[in-house]
Length: 103
Image (cartoon, rainbow, N blue to C red; front, side):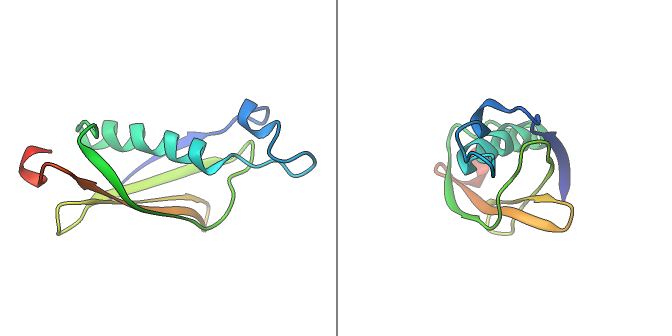
């Protein structure tokens, strides 16, 4: 399993409206950080891949340092998870629309 880290600035613009007094990084922003990290880490383009599943388990907060772990699965997909420390934020699976041989 490979892992990379990404940080969300304490003043991240996406958190300004989500939510006053209790800011969170929107799930779409977390996912948008994870996908290019996976592409870079595996050396593949995800343009022919789709998100088969994603489960958001906990919020990311401004200032968080998120660890993104990912690995190829036996069925040819890519499993990934985002966490802050021991707290899992997001778990997901990517599947290639063209089959694993063309990924």
